[in-house]
Structures are given as C-alpha cells and as structure tokens.
Image (cartoon, rainbow, N blue to C red; front, top):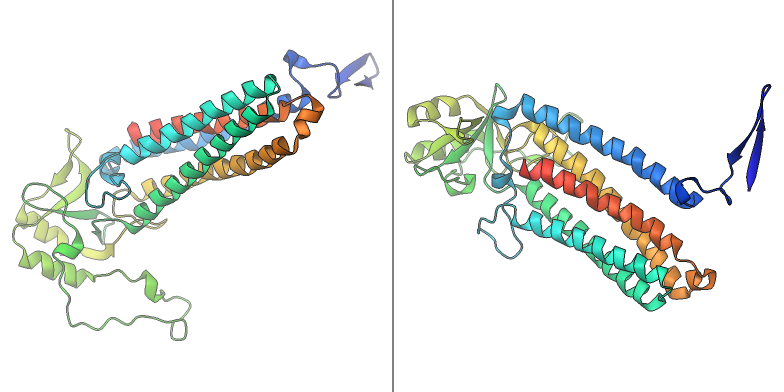
Amino acid sequence: METTVTTANNEEKTWGGGDIQPLGASYGKMMMWFFIVSDALTFSGFLGAYGFSRFKFIETWPLADEVFTHFPFMHGVPAPMYYVALMTFILIFSSVTMVLAVDAGHQLKKTKVAIYMFLTIIGGIIFVGSQAWEWKNFIKGEYGAVETKGGSLLQFVDKDGKRVALEEFAVKLPEQREALSRAKAKWFMQDAESLPTYTVAEVQAGFKAHPDLLIRTEKLTETKKKTVLSRAESETRLADAKYVVEGANLIRNEYGNKLFADFFFFITGFHGFHVISGIIINIIIFFNVLLGTYEKRRSYEMVEKVGLYWHFVDLVWVFVFTVFYLV
C-alpha cells in the first residue's frame, strides 16, 4: 500500500503502512517504537529534574536507606531497600516471561504463549501491589518529626543516634483540641483527619521529660550522616517548632526536603500508571490468545508489540530504581 504525494517539482511515494517496511518493521511495531521514544524523553525529563533538585538541596535530601526500610510481616525490623530490591527482581522476571511468550509466539505454540503471558500479568500485579504497599508506609510514616517556623525539619534520636518515634516520648496534655467535622468546619479549616496525633506542646513536654533525647537535623555531615545536636542546642531548636509532621504528603514530609516526597509520588506514580496500563493490555492480549485469535492469523505479532512496551516499562524502572533509590 503506497500513497503518492505530488509537489510542483517532483512526485514522491510515502509509506502507507503496507508492504514497504522501514527498518524491516511492520507499521504497528514502528508506531510502538515512536511511542516508546517519546515516552522515554518524558521520563528523562522527570529524572533529570529530580537529579537537579537533589543536588541543589543535597545537604537536606533524605537518605533512601532510612526511608525505605519496611518489609512485609517484619514490623520493626530494619530492612533497608530489601523490599524495593525484591520488587525490582519481580518486575525484571516478568520481562523474562514476556520474552519467552514472544519466542513461543514465533513458534506458534499457543499454550506456552498463554502460560508465559499469565506469569507476566501476575508479576505486574505483584509489583503494582508492592508499590501501593510502599506508598502506604511512606504516607503513614514511622517516627514523626517537627517542622520549625523557618521550615527546617527536626527528628528525634537517643544518645546512641537511633531514631525515636514521637509516640515513645510525647505526652498527652489536658489541652482541648477541636476536631472539626464537616458540619462545623469552615472552608479554610482542616478536617479532623488531618490533625496530627500530638501537638507541638505535647512533643515539647515529652522531650523535656526525657533528658536522654537529642534532636537530629536534616542537614548532612561530610560523612553522609544527619547532624545530631547537643542537648542545649536541641532545646533551643525545638522551642521554634511550629508543626508536627507524621508521614509524607505533597506539602511536607517527615523524612527531609519536601521535594523528595513530591518527586516520589509523581515519578513512581507515573511509572505505576504505565505498569497498570501494561497489565490491562496484557490481559486483553492473554484472552485473545486463549480465544485463538492469533492462532487463526498465524501471527503473534500483537504479543511482540505489547512485549516491547513491557520491556520499556521494566527498563524505565531500572533507571528509577538506580537514580531514586541507589544513588
């Protein structure tokens, strides 16, 4: 299939998606490659912005080893980066099963294609579920912190430098805190759910009652450790506290620089959207395989095209994992 384009000086033939195949690729695969290239540029922009922001605020940037320490069914056991590494392995393994599905398609082996497609879908679902679990822990937080009027973040440690959660020392004061309901709240007021567990006064009172506690700032030392203040310095800094921060959101987070949470939600969320889209497409292709659609066509090219997308999603995660979690 060809289309003739006539100009004032010459006559040219352009590709209409038929027999003429640039680079030996079909029209569908060429369009998938165009999409992948454009999407790769989008992710490159996001990761580039993350890199610039991180190195601009390098002294206050959170340490990934201190943020992503959770592992399912191991509450309270520090496992830095273990679960993220497991998620990455599962996604990469799903890419392997996709390769096997494409190879089985070339051999017109319907049963094997279905099996490997099913394993790919399961791997994607596990990854997305794991990412949702990681988000839950990130949003909920574990230790809590306070933010000063100047925007600095203060965390609490014991004399050995080990993090201490607010619930371990904060006291409950008889002060009345109005929990705003929808019936009583005004448009500029917060809902009751947004109130932190403790007030600044309760944290300050608890800190005063525990002389062994110290404050750790978000600023990094030359040895890549957070700066721990003396007791006197800690009391001075805590007197300037304004907010109690628990977990992370788009406004502030207990781990360090606010941009860290913004980039975490946006980049991992955007990638997660791609994975969910890939799972949906894989499910559609999987049922078409079961129905024998591609067997009748004597071609499993659709499996190959969706495989290109899935490999791209996996490759992007390798870069996200490296830049966001490891560097």
